Length: 83
Length: 83
Image 1 (cartoon, rainbow over the protein chains, first blue to last red):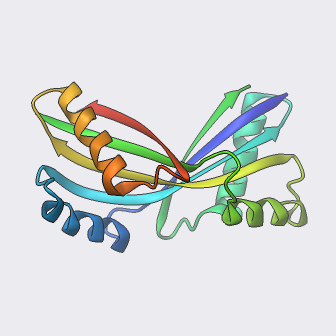
Image 2 (image 1 turned 45 degrees about the horizontal axis):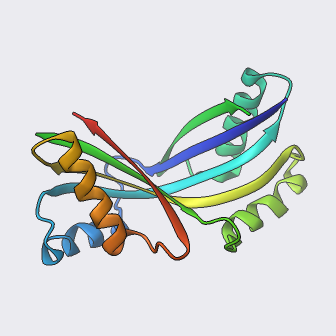
Image 3 (image 1 turned 90 degrees about the vertical axis):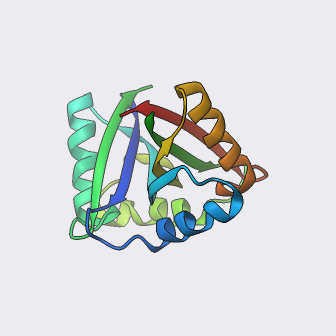
């Protein structure tokens, strides 16, 4: 079966997020003063072939832990959808 | 009212995605041969203050078009949740 995997990678709380801080500092100068706590992460998507949704999810979580994310500084939220 | 905005920024179809291509080339060497079409984008999250969910959404879409994304090469999916 074919699944669509979506991984949301965000910096963990307490880890510096320079890209987010830069956006946050720039927003007021551009007329947007109502935003707070900007964080920028990564979004990884791909198609994966597996026996079942559970198998696909455990495969994707394994990929995350092994090399797609750095668990020391990043949190990953995995979503697997049947296509 | 306070809202949580989430923007998924992905490269448009047909636009090169070197980070995704590199991951896709590396996966088989690491034992994952069942993945295809890897795309890496950005995930921007922040808190926004607005009168209503509609106002928050139109504010965030305005930010996207003005400077958070490059509409020539990127697609943005905006999600606004009440907190």
